[in-house]
Length: 377
Length: 146
Length: 83
Image (cartoon, rainbow over all chains, first blue to last red; front, side, top):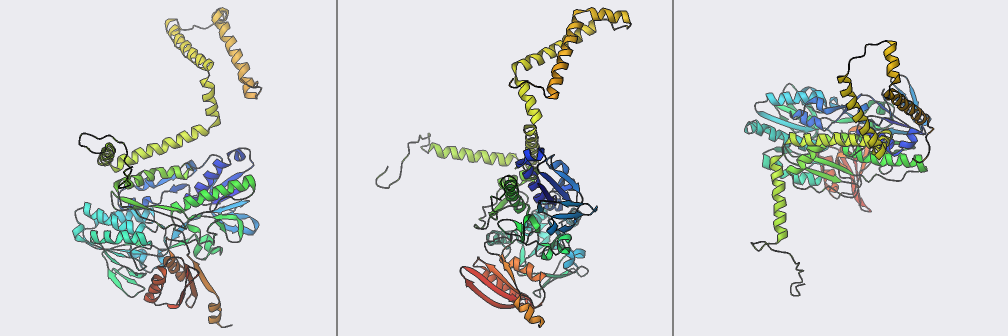
């Protein structure tokens, strides 16, 4: 049985490693083959980008060699897929090779498309790539005072990031002793400071306490990088000296190009995690069209379900488990406090008060993440 | 049970202040947590977690390596342990004997003399036996149930 | 067949039932971005807050609210992308 995984990020790696552990004997006997195709030989810990943007991590700490994270029995190649031939159970890669499969797992993730908002790339600090995160830190460290604006594009991965950025900005300027010289203004697309009701209920008084202004129902329309003005769809605008933006996202180009999903988001069954119309194709992580947060955490829990199902299909011919929508996200609330949100399809998140212990749990998880990727945690 | 209030009274000891022993234990735990919070800092937590992370990965690899685990099992046998100890002692004494003796000068005559020594015969016999058993094991001619 | 008739008959469903993050309104905003002017979208939500949140956003941004009703415990809110 040939299992092909497209994408070596959080989702793809965990599925691969998890299946390799479950089907260790079959793998050793050659009854099962697992292949992972990726666009990169490195694996990035994306949550680290926020730390890089605030000078708490250096870029080298974000990466590990992808091959070193995978079970020895997995065949890994840096050769991204350029064409999906789902009706033939085949894919074609950049090098021109074709890989056929019995089971396909699509875990290609998502990309930022700041160009969707005119002027955003030119005017804003984006921090969703290594380069932009380093640039943001440099700009922050040079900043002596003025108006800092935070805006949010839709959709975006890591829904909690806008709130975390505000806490980090407040603590950062405080630690430099210039918080009183900085005005922080936060803008959010819906009618409250965060899309999750309980997060908004918790964050709003915190914003008030920190002296952070906020404007809700603000959907970014365009940025005038020269005049340093941001305009919204709703007809309002504001001036900034430093603009921080979480850019809008799309699925990977190949997904869109091939018409596998509008915007690059593949239609996926929310319980079975199979692609609509294809029982032997699983989809997980950012690239699904599911109304589930685009986070590493969702990818992890989805991967557990998919791996278990692939193994059971290999052993008994049918899947055994459904995805229950589980997501667990840390919420950094500044330099030394954190809380978390856990929810699934049935239960909303109930936030506990932020604490130092949770912050250390997050610090520890920054290291333990690699064990998660290996299929250990 | 206190029939008036319905409260269940448990038989706990009291400290000198007349408080619940349990309560003071909880306070102690709380103080410990606070002390840990005061003592720890980000880099310390990161390092600890990092080491734990790598340690877990290492243990995971070792325990899933059938050859290594098989070797461990072999080495746990008393005979294996005795043999290893013997080997270690032999090497030590050999080292001592070598440093006390003259360096070999070479030549066929000397070679024949060494071949005549009982130690040489024992050594060859050991090598022959190791060769025989190693070959059998590698080729898979192992006997069942050792 | 007129272009408007075609758009009217194809309602894009945004099924955000039983989800909390990013939630029905954010899902709708993302889908509206992908849609063409004149497209009709219908968001399904089990969150009672949507009954107020969604129309608020639809009106503030300048789209057209077509209907807003609760059917079998699910809010069904239909809107047309106007700009």
